[in-house]
Image (cartoon, rainbow, N blue to C red; front, side, top):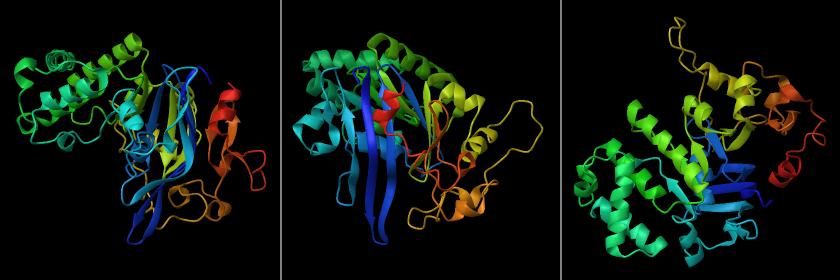
Length: 348
């Protein structure tokens, strides 16, 4: 495992609600090689962001907990830290979170404290994790604001979040996330509020940082074009579970799961006169999940047993895993037992 930085095994994240417990993330397993970019895709409510927050230990509040599984982080080839074993308020996880593992949060409008200047919030991170003086932290923060194309960065350093547009807040949040040169960056919809020109610049910057600092990235997005351009491997999630996992090239060349096929079919084509395809129905409520395959009520290929028996994970092609009965029959569960992250690595 020396060439891997993260290994997630059987991760299950549960939230307590007035109507009962819900499994926001259910039996998620994957591994992440150093310098790899993993894309996570799926509709809203599929568990992408909760998976990321579980890795960062940001779900353990009054109503949330990691109920099962492990998240093993390997900052160096000879060091292994089980993040799930750490208290979410401990000094050890606080040193890792923001310094070694950083996250670009999905909502730029609510990610900064409104009562402090944005520059001060960025500088605080640098002082805490890099031990810089206040003057050094200010210079570093201004440098990072310049790198994400914030105009008049020195002046903007002292401005408050409400003085930034949504796109500028998004860029400032990206600047803060990458300012400590993290080993692992989790980017949750990093280009949501950006226009296409700035989006291209930010994606280019992330590519540069990956090359300069040997940074590993988890990219969460709805944009399949970003997935095609930026990622090495792709994990498709649906209702808290992994529906399909493969290399990006294999996913686009031969998508196996009907859900993945539908996502790719929904991409607008320039010059096409056909009506834009949309997936019928919506992601089921986690409080009322269907029996069997969670996608069966929306699937055009669903068979009778799809509605009664949950499919295991099959591997029709080496390294290409899919949770769908189209690739096996009931009774094949032993042959098709889901690969754990460690088994996956052993086979590569």
